[in-house]
Image (tube, rainbow, N blue to C red):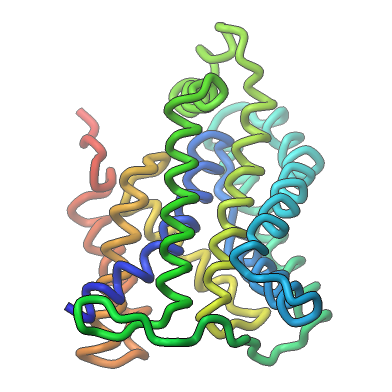
Length: 288
């Protein structure tokens, strides 16, 4: 039971990271390989707000996520939108966006190494025990999970119960048809990319409350996000949440019963199994 609850608590932040990436790819058609660097930059942001200004990290989400939203909107407008307009088909856009965000990943990583160096950072926040079903868990993990659930719930309500959320889902399904019914596809794509970056930053802030991080570890979270998105089905938010839960449980079980050093291997094993037996994702349908 302890492993199960620990895995569920970890899956909350994983789900936010994956939802951010699936929004960026599903709506904007941009596979953002700098996702992990956005997350790590948010960790450093939360660290600085907490240690320098004594801002509660949970409230720090309200500061860091809007900054990430603005930054990601600017990246889309200045770097990625010209690629979207130039691309003659979806395949060309995917190749161009992967190459450009691959370069962006090293740019962000270089700036963070310049500012913070290569050492590991962490801070103490709510590091007291919280008992669930007779097992003690870190209160910071419980609070991070609860905050992630609230953010995911707000995103669900926005996408499914607002006019603009419906427009974004329409662009995700068919951008050409969405344009025919007066939806500003370019603006919706920029908004989705920025919103995805904000979700990833929120996950980074929450993760920083119980995780040790450094400037070079973004690529690990990018790979985990990619694996969750592919397991859940590209563009499928429900699948991303379920895949994040599976990944969190698998990592926790391997770290507990085998060896913590094998968690990344378990992640890739899940990825390979998914590609072999369920390449369309958990809820996806096989092509006819």
